[in-house]
Structure formats: C-alpha cells, structure tokens
Length: 282
Ligand SMILES: Nc1ncnc2c1ncn2[C@@H]1O[C@H](COP(=O)(O)OP(=O)(O)OP(=O)(O)O)[C@@H](O)[C@H]1O
Image (cartoon, rainbow, N blue to C red; front, side, top):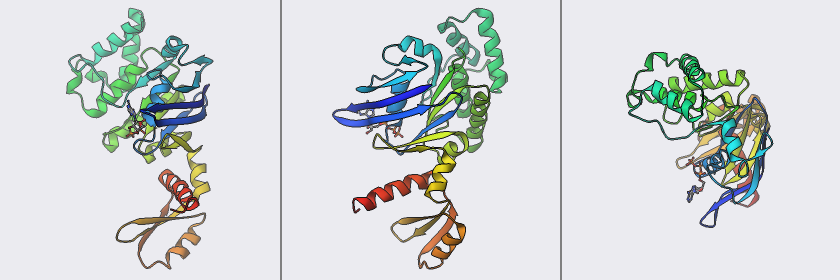
C-alpha cells in the first residue's frame, strides 16, 4: 500500500537519501532505523509531502506524493520529532482547532476529542495548557492530534525521543492499540529496543542508503543470535554466533574482558558494516 521506488534527495550536492526502494504492508508497523545523519528524517519528510524528492516516487494507496499531495494529506497523520504544540492553548482547544482545520463537523469533532482523550488517558488534562504538560503527555497529545481526522496511515519521526522508559512504554502501548485497529504506522527511531518491540519490518539506513530490510527477529537470527563483545582498552570488537555453546567456547579463549549476550538490531548493523569493512580491507 506504500511503495517507494528509487527515492533520492541531496543537499548541496551531497546525497542525503540515495535510491531507496521499499514496500510497506497495510496494517503493519514499519521502522526506519539508522545512526545520526543516516537519512531517516529526510526520508520521512519526503513520504509525508513536506520535502520534494530529487527523483524517484512514493505511491500511497495509488496516489503519488508530489502529484496528489492534497489527497495524501487526508490519508495520513504525522507527528514530527520536535514538540509542535500551541503552548498557550489547552489540550482540548488544540484538538478542537485540529478538527476544525480538517473541516470536521462540531458533533463529530467533539465525539472524537472525547474518544481520543480517553484512548490516551489524557481526559483529566483536557483543560491544562500545553506548556504545563509533561514530555510524555505532550507526545501523547501530538499523537492523538495527528489521528483526529481518522487517517489510515500514521507517520512518526522519533516518537519517544527524550522520554523516560515508562512514558516511552505508554507510547508503545498506544501505537500497538492503533495497529490493532488496522492503522498502518511508519516510524523513525534511534532506539533499538523500540524497533524490536514494535516493528513488523525494519529498514536499516546508513549514509542515505539501504543497508538491509526485514523482520527484526529474522535479521537477528541471520546475523547470529549470540554476540560476544570483547573489550580492549580502546575499543570493543563484536563476534556473532548461531549457538550459545559456540559463543561461550569462543569467548573462553579471550584474554580481554568480554560479555556473551543475545544479539539485537544494533548488532545486525555492526555486522553488516564489519563485513563491508572487511570487504574493502578496513
Ligand atoms: N535541509 C538540509 N540542508 C542541508 N543538509 C541537510 C538538510 N537536511 C538534512 N541534511 C543532511 O542530510 C543528511 C541526512 O540527514 P537526516 O536528518 O535525514 O538524517 P537522520 O538519519 O534523520 O539523522 P538524525 O538521527 O541525526 O536526525 C545529513 O548529512 C544532514 O546533514
């Protein structure tokens, strides 16, 4: 239902995103991951019609983002990375304004506000001014504001950045509930645990290019379910194993300090970069 073909964008002749291809299934949670500068936000902004690609196409439900941006805006909700709330308005007023901007009728608007405030457990905060809310509440408010107009697809750029672990988990719960209602969710994240917990599929980016794409648990299994991380005074080195026995046997020969642990998506990233480095002799 979302098809991205050869999507590219450069700034000052430097590639920010380079020939990306991917496909997102309806009703799934799709994660775009990568280190700082990998191209996550640039990709996000192109998908949500905020930035024009240099080349390539993004098709959402048979509409193309540059050609049919008005149709696409009705289908999607979007939450940016930075707090973007009218800080002097109350929670209720912010949602009311958003409903009006989307030409929702009074009754429909008010029913929706009521439903969403309960959904996000913010009903007791409805008269609070936005700037008085905690970070976690602000994020929840941005999330429900983005779905006021009943979009089919929700885009979130770093939805839990800067939140404490409990607030982060509360956002995860809301996203899982939305998925269970059939919503398609696309998010960018730095948090490996977030991607592993939430995402049906992930796309790992580096330097604007696709490193790998797939189901988190499969990517981890293919890398090796166990990692031996060996620490020397300046660095740490990673080794990957398909069985715990092999990992333990290998580590027993180590002179440096080490740990044996389960692999995660960060290890997938490290493993691919290591193989690329080995291939070019780094
Ligand atoms: N408006 C811009 N003008 C110039 N360069 C830009 C602009 N936006 C992004 N870039 C560059 O494009 C590259 C990708 O940036 P982008 O913000 O998409 O990465 P990111 O993966 O979202 O990073 P982060 O995790 O730090 O937010 C970076 O080198 C960045 O400096």
